[in-house]
Image (cartoon, rainbow, N blue to C red):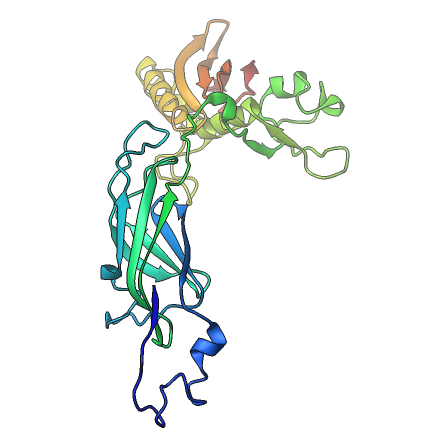
Length: 313
């Protein structure tokens, strides 16, 4: 129901809006009324009016920011798709929406999902010039429909990186394309695609590169990464002759691999090469969130102080 609010006096004997000074709001804007209500988000109900409501923010009589003008009632006879009855909610804040003739009523908790029903009622809201007042209005609406999607491995977005393979298997398997299958280019060199732009590799090969980077990086070497990042195998190569040192570095390597977001399980063991006493093989067994598993052999030459290329799948 919309009723005019009389204003005695003004600049003359007319009301503020009725004279030429006030611009005649009722004539220019038409009847002030509430048009609709809907839920654009789980915790928001948007009210749409025929024109901008009075919004002062000081809680005077018709201030639309005052929560006392609103009430939200859940229809307890309706349920959401989750099978639960419509939960009770309360208005917590009111703000002007993107359009000046709309208000967003923020709630203290999310609405129950569709098809749970709610009724929002408003009363004593005035037009921007306070010439017309909505005594009361109410609207029925549904809660927002949202179905929670489980985090399934097949829905995981694959990662990608510049193609600079760190493993012999990445080149030998031809994952970079025919031009690089069996290529003699040294590992770690950036490749280009047929267009001349940087080539990309993805999936397991990206995980392998990150694992190698952690293994050979000295702790604290990257200022933008945590001080604990990196295993530092090259700095420890002379010490790896001791079984206790090998076990400690293998344990750290395993913990580092498990920090990769794509990895769900990892195991690292350090094994001396029986045919070459200076070689220590760090054998890595890794399982990713997409279900892929692979084993890598990361040999370290304790005499030459170098990390050999990965072998394995």
